[in-house]
Image (tube, rainbow, N blue to C red):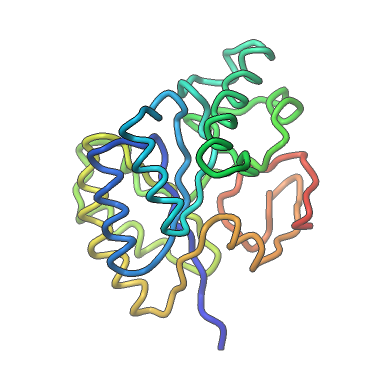
Length: 216
């Protein structure tokens, strides 16, 4: 029987405080994740952290350069937000990201015309809200677990409650026979079909895009 598959994704890094703690956990359990980077957060020190993630088999994806509300920008500004971070990702990995997570999950029709990527959302545990306890986050993640789920998490500076939650969640899901994949691996495994009303089938919480892909 095939294992259930799941993807951990993290927004708003990289940094030298929380991101390394996440990587330590991934390394401890020999699993991978996908990191949606904010380009302006990549400096000489955080670049080392991002490269460590790549060396571990993790995936780096695009979360814009400055984390703006994209629908409020001009077309040129939208393009530059994505292009600047793509250039950083190419430096770190040798290629741009095929996946994009819009800040605040704010989208508008124009973005789908401008940004030739798959727009990713995810199943969250409200971990962008500082008052959410590690226990609440862990309980929410475990309640939402099912085959094909993409978790939307944050490795932003100070977000230690998510790290603590993962100390419960990762071993619990491994015990339930889940396999942890990158977003690319999950798409390749599930080969979801695109539906303009529901997004990509078999992968919950993917923001629909009008970009046709090899995964159809």
